[in-house]
Length: 177
Ligand code: NI
Image (cartoon, rainbow, N blue to C red; front, side, top):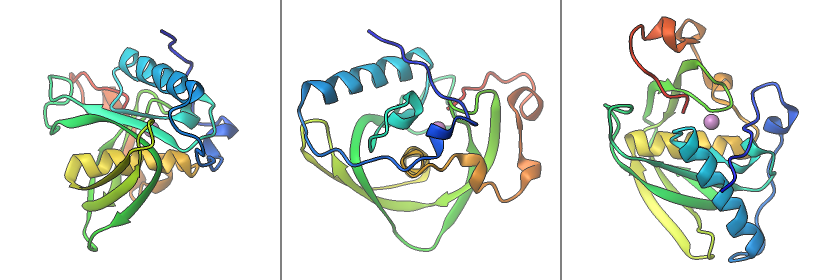
């Protein structure tokens, strides 16, 4: 079990475009995913992208169980998504609050496509092809943005809706991601 250090905004590695994975079901890829899972769970994150631990590969994980920390969230099954392709379905955008393990303590209001199709592979190379909406779609878009060097503050339209958790949501325990 290895909990890796999560890079924080300002580290140039978070701004780079990650490279596609070319070989699946390898020891290296499984080891990377073990570290990513351990790190995400240790930090109670909803998702983690490989570049956040300094690995420039197009690999993300995400998953949320509805609980007291995510009272409004729907369940999102724990998913490994590699070399993802996102296709927005329709023009509708939705705004909602997001946080990020690379931007600890802060939260911002971010527009995302309300419904998307996402395709990719798992760590064994099996194809993934799903259509999702709402919170699930938001988490996927947030994580995949990391693969293109995009952090959520870059997408905030109204900078008055960006701030510290304690100030925005006094008395509420908030997660970073
Ligand atoms: Ni993030």
